[in-house]
Amino acid sequence: MTENKNTDIIEGQVVNETKNNSKAFFAPALIDIIMLALGITLLIWADKVVNGISMAIGGLFILYATYNFIAYLRSEKKAADTTKLIAGIAMVIAGIFLISQTGFIKEIISFVVGTFIIIASMIRLQDSFKLRKINKEAAKIPLVLSSISLICGVLCILGKILIPDIFLQILGVMLIIFSFSDISGLLTTHKK
Image (cartoon, rainbow, N blue to C red; front, side, top):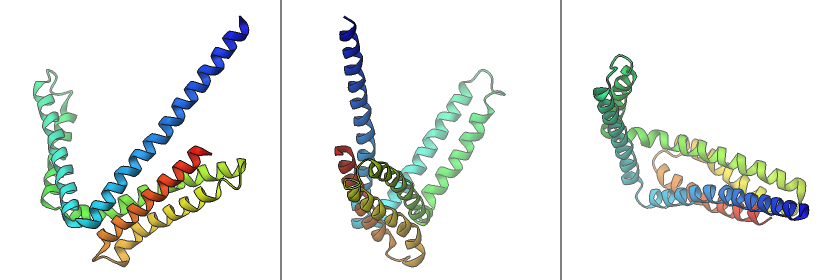
C-alpha cells in the first residue's frame, strides 16, 4: 500500500514536471512567433507598421486614461483616488503625443527590440551553459544559436546609429533571424 502511494506521488511529480516543461517551452515559443511576425511585417511595410504601433499604443493609453477618469468620477472618496486622476491626465498626454508623433516610436523601437533580444539571448545562453555541463555535444547548437541571437540584439541597438535610412527593414531581418535561431534553440534544448 505504501509503495502505491509512493508510486502515485512519483507519477504526480512527473506529470507536474511535464506540465511545467510545456509552459516553459510554449511561452517563449509564442513570443518568438510574435517576433517573427513583427519582423516579417517590418521587412515588408516598415513605416506603416511603426505608425500603426505608435497609434495603437497611443490609443491604449487614452483608453486606459478614460478608464481612470471614469473610476475617479465614480469614486466616493475623490481625495483618496486623486492618483487615478493624475495617472489619467498623464496617460492622455502620452497617448496624444504617441498618436501625433509617430516618429518617436521609430526612434526608440530599435533600442527596445534590441534590448529584448539581448535579454532573451542571454537567458538562452545561460540555458546552453547549463546543458553544456550535462552534455557538451548537445549544447553546441544551442550555444551557437544563442550567440547569433545575441549578435542580432547588439546589431539592433547599433544599427540605428550606423544605418539610419533603411534600419527598419534591417530590424525586420534581425527579428526574423532571432526568431528562427531562438525557436531552433528552444526545440533543441527542449528535446535534450
